[in-house]
Length: 148
Length: 148
DNA sequence: GCCAAAATCATCCGAAAGTATGACGACACA
DNA sequence: TGTGTCGTCATACTTTCGGATGATTTTGGC
Image 1 (cartoon, rainbow over the protein chains, first blue to last red):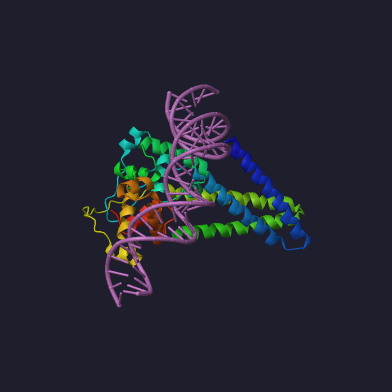
Image 2: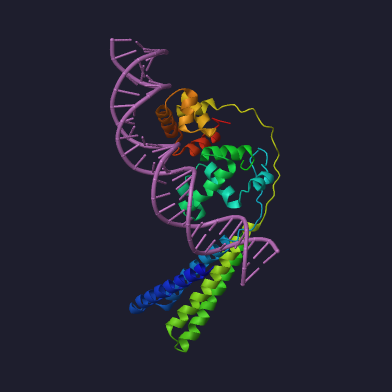
């Protein structure tokens, strides 16, 4: 949490600096205050939206999404297997992305974490699934009803 | 959805009006542009945050859809895709073993060929499936109906 | 507030996978 | 008899994976 506050603080500083920069440029060329204000407004609105998104992204409520499956059975994930094997949400998430054929790097980009983190998760996942390879993990996951 | 857009539009209008108001007041009393800009910035940042929160709150809405189930069909391999992509018997065979989670070495042992041969086949297979990884090839194969 | 679990990230290293290229024999088929 | 496809194999090289380990941060429950 401390880190986040620091980051936000830094962003604020940068933005203020940016503000100054824009301000002087516009003052020098004697532009209308409306344009100036509008610009600042839009920039900060965008930043705000980004901030809002960022802030709520992590919350990720424990709502179980019931996605409409095409024609096939709705696929109910096997919660017992999941808990009995001690597989966490994050690990399951990564298993799904692996099954989609993504590389560790791509998974990292998609989840906004480093490739190393993905590797750590997948290693633990493989251990829990007794899999030696990601393809095997996908196969096991399907058999155990962890992924569709 | 239309109503939302209208609401947002109205909000925008109100904000612009507010902007004008603040602008004139501050201009009249000859306040510094910094305060003015900062005020606009913070207002819009807040609005942005609010917007961001509002936009992402929808995520939590759960839509439960019960879809009619079709009985599990025995899986008929898609011969057209197979020929149109120019995938040979051997390559399909290897795709199936890849989907089972076997390594190249294991596939070679099972088919009584060298690992290098397996690699050659899989390379060509990946090219035909536009896949970069074996996991991706498996995913494509499933989508195209080449494997169950 | 404290503690355990979960998540994050890093580094090193070896194994596996994938790319590129060339080669050779078998077989079909025109 | 030449041509093309398929299957086989090899070498060399790059990239990706996976294991092992240690560390820090975040989160959730008590």
